[in-house]
Length: 329
Ligand code: BTN
Image 1 (cartoon, rainbow, N blue to C red):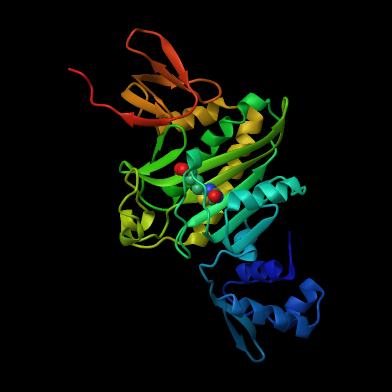
Image 2 (image 1 turned 120 degrees about the vertical axis):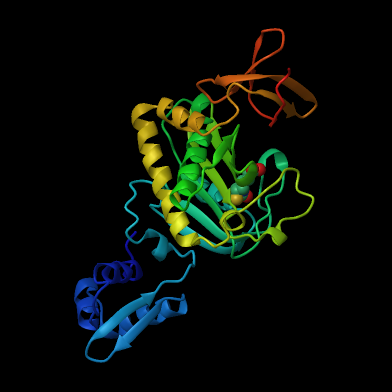
């Protein structure tokens, strides 16, 4: 959606080496001088540093690391993901908000982002720690026209997109852990929670929920976490721009989604397996009251973990927590 504000930011981007006159903006947008001035004032309030020089015009000196729709969508150039972007300050959960919007008919590709979440949802009814100003909490609404049993494939697509965005934002080698964790050096840096709305054989919509620990300092992680966690800040010692990470991630999801709709699950699965260290290794899986031990032989076409049990039988595991085991002598 191109609003006046987005268009002004686009014009600044195109004219980065010179001043943009008020008249040019008026002409391009078809709005009055006072309307332009109002937009400039609002951009400044949002943290954009805009210099105004009489008889020359405006120059954009710096952009804030704020997650606001215009900054995310300007020049994003995605086809589906980010068609509508909603940025909230504090909310319960971006997944809950995205689900509500989808139920009210939000377009495919709608993105909901929050600065902080009061009830961030994790897998298996857990809580996702979501303090303000540091991390990314994002949900995307997709409406893939694929059989219902394939809905799980989108989780793997999301995990690959997050890994690619992390790789693009620094010298990182993220690893993927089944079913939906992204790790750095064995510690969790991102989690995914995809929620489905479907009926009989038809997917109405999917909400891809993504939480990435970007700039959370070590002391902000609770001491009693179930498994070790980290952030990009902790790993590389300097903050990453939430804005540019978000834009990269949306582009990656968009590109992989196009690939998936064109070529199916197999390129996504290969990209996922390339980053997964569990294939061929001995693991233990916990799910509610049962525990299984075996060797991972791969994933099937819906992303279930194929576990070779000690007796030789192969078990399909659809949910659970997996832990690597030491190899037996
Ligand atoms: C996990 O347990 O690993 C999944 C965590 C998913 C967290 C994200 S943050 C954005 C979205 N909104 C939520 O309430 N949860 C997901």
